[in-house]
Amino acid sequence: MMRIKTPKNHRIRRELEKRAPKLVETAKKTLILHGTKTSGVLNSLLSEIYHLKKDNSVKFSRKNDNIRPFESGGETSLEFFSLKTDCSLLVYGSHSKKRPHNLVLGRTYDHHIYDLVEIGIENFKSMGSFSYDKKLAPQTGSKPFFAFIGEAFESVDELKHLKEILLDIFRGEVVTNLNLAGLDRVYVCTALSSNKIFFSHFALRLKKSGTVVPRMELVEVGPSMDMVVRRHRCPDDGLRKEAMKTAPELTKKKVWLAETFDLQSLSPFVIRNQ
Image (cartoon, rainbow, N blue to C red):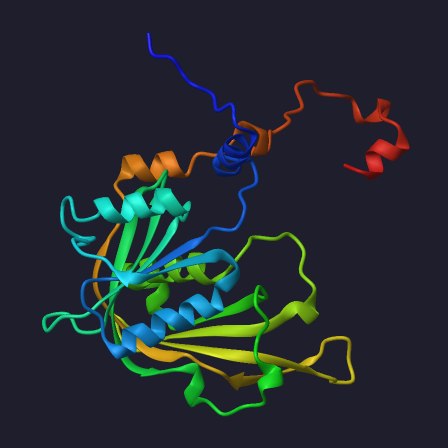
């Protein structure tokens, strides 16, 4: 019979409780790391993704060998780093002659690879290449708007998959209430073809409009780039079913009326609220 050892150290116990499954999960953390070889474009892009997600991301500065996410056994290191840093989202950059400026976006479930999308970066413009009033720069941790323009995001499997992962990576913590004044950025993704999108980032300015709803102005602050989908790997049905399970405490129970009543016998208050 296998014994289960419980930690006696309070600090370790608290850390394990933080990583344990919860009814309401905290914001997902993102692991950002380099491959054996990268380019100046990728180095700049990875740094800016870290800047945009600084409050809930971990960035490795060293190059990592033997990571090949789409090959059998090549994802072992990614899963180990995911467990070590408690990150469920992955951003991995690499560069080669066959796949230049290559970026792999992925998600994990129970620290095992859940799904992956590989994209090529083209026409990259960093945040430093845009001129604007620095007071408009979005604040760290603020909630963003998202705009996905084009029917391909609903009809093409590759772009539908990319849309899901981009939302997971950049949306931040899931909340139930929002203060409009705290919304200061917009991510705009435009479908250019069946495997290519244009990604851009704007600061949001709220101005008086004479009505309750303020007038909104967009100021491009970067980064911006074209993303070309090269490969993608969806989760298998068994893993997807396991990951989509909902705790019984969060499942809304349906209440059925088991008995029938004569409306004549009901009080006027109950009749008005039928």
